[in-house]
Amino acid sequence: MGTSTSNRGQNGNTPLVPSWLGDNNDGDQKPEQPQPAQPQPEQPQPADSKRFSAPRSNFTRYVNSGGSGNGKLHRAASNYVRHSLGGSQNATTRLGSARNSTTRLLSVFSSFASRGVADTSRDYKLGDIIGKSASDVLLRIMDFVCPDGGSTDEGIARNSYVEALSTLPDWENKPIESLTPPEFLAFAEIYMANVIEGRLVNDIGNKLFALPKDVAQVESIQGQLKDYIKGAVSDAVSKLKIDIRSIDTSQTKAIVDSIYRTAYDILSELEE
Image 1 (spheres, helix red, strand yellow):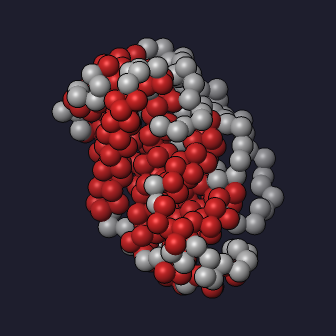
Image 2 (image 1 turned 45 degrees about the horizontal axis):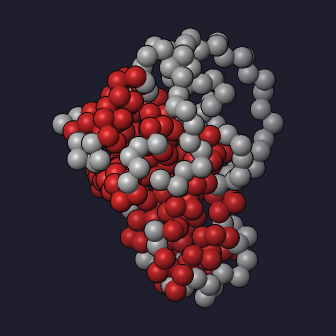
C-alpha cells in the first residue's frame, strides 16, 4: 500500500466532517486578501459511534479471503461512503487538503496541456524545465502540489503523489514537453485514486497491515483495491467528459470536487 499515514482506524465518535477541515480554496493559489471576521461555526455533533463497524468488518473479511471475496470489498466501500461518511459530498469534503493538492496538480497539468511547457514554467516559476524528464519535473513541483505537513490528509496527498510517480518509471526517459494531454490526465486519475484509497485504508483498512502474512497475497489484495478505485475515478472522468486542455482555472476546484463526488457515488453504488 505504501501509505505512511496509517493508523488504528477512525473513531466513530468523531464528526462526519470535522470542523477544522473547513472548505477553503487555497488550491486556487490566488493572492491572499484580508477577510472580514467570520462567526465561529457551531461545534458539530458526534456521529454514530458504530458507523465504521460494518465497512470495517466487510473489509477485514475481504482481506481474510486473500482477495477472493470481491463482493465483500464492494460492500465495504459502498457502506463506507453511504453510512460511515454520509454520502459523496461529505466524503469529498473530508479529503481536506488533498482536494487542494489535486486542484494545484490539475491547474499545472491543464496549463501544460493547453499552453505549453515554456509558458507554464514562466507563470508558475518552475525554472528551466525544457528538455528535463517528466519524472524530474514532477518531483520538482511536488512541494508546490503537496506541501509537507503533519495532518493525515496532507500525508495522504503527498504519499499519493509519490506512489503515482512510482507507477510511471518510463517517464524518467520522457521530456516533459513530449507528454500528451491524455498522459497528464492519466497521472491525475492515478493520483486521485491513490488519495481515495489512502483515506479509505486509514478509516477502515487497518487490518490490511496485519493480514495476511503471505506477501504475494498482500500484493494481490492491494492491486485489486487500487484497480477497483482507479476504475471508479476513470469512470467519473469519462462521465463528466473532462478535457484537461479546456479547464478554466477559476473552475478547477469545482471540477476536482465533481470528480471526487462522482467517483464516491460510483463506489457507493457498486455494492454487488
